[in-house]
Amino acid sequence: MINHWTLQQFRLFEAVARHQSYTRAAEELCLTQPAVHIQVKRLEESMGLSLIEVVGKKILLTRAGKEVLAVALAVRSQLNALSGTLTDIKGKVAGPLHIGVVTTAQFFTPHFLGQFLRDYPDVRPLLKVANREQIVERLSANEDDLVIMGQVPDNIALSVHPFMDNILEPIAHPEHPMAGQRDISLETFAAERFLMRESGSGTRSATERLFARHGLKPSIYMELGSSESIKQAVMAGLGVSVQSTSSLALEKETGRIVALDVVGFPLRRMWHAVHLKGKHLSLTAATFLEYLAREGPKFGAR
Ligand code: PGA
Image (cartoon, rainbow, N blue to C red):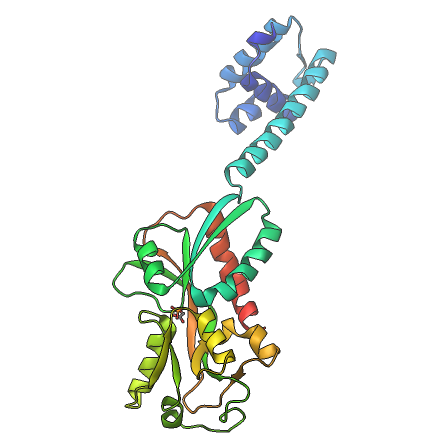
């Protein structure tokens, strides 16, 4: 006979018992009073016992009715718990998170990921570090969930989310003659052996724009393809350069690289998390994006 019981009958019976009224139970469930009555009657018939006694105008539960009510309440609470569990499963922040980053962002992105993974250990991050040109290609081809870059291309329709300051400063070896000097002019700086990033680099174009605004062009001594190679060349004493502070924490802390006091610097820009406009973000990617927006300003202030 269990086969004939339905969840709906338990639901209706529970409402009648709670309201002690067929009419109020019917109102709550948006049904007619006879419809509720019929279903409760069917439940009673299939159980072979009365569940409700009407005494005068009062609705009372029989002993069997009290037993059925206890089960109906337990079933309801189990179903509610199940519904929550299903929502969690559907909405779980987990699985792959593809992030493409320009070389300068490789110095901080892992730290964001480290913190994020402590909260969401089931996320599997896949980090692609490449120069800006390659990252822009990946962005156009929609290869990553999110891309982290400084200078955003203006020829692709994008959703752009700035999340942290990107401050560019002039740098040199600590024994460079300009180290410790005050108010170095842009002309003097531009005449130094300049270590320049590859063309297409956001750092490079921001630096060139600053010089160009003052009618200057740095004398490029060497061109290097990543921010890491620029840092190594500066530490080797090969020349001066301009680099995002986000990439210099360790070298400045250990005194291997120093910032120069050049008029017109630092350059203030932003780091952006970017994806194609209209792209559907996975819950994991959307959660990481929110996380960057929340934590980026704190991280940048460190
Ligand atoms: P880059 O990007 O590594 O390509 O220079 C950083 C930036 O745009 O600031």
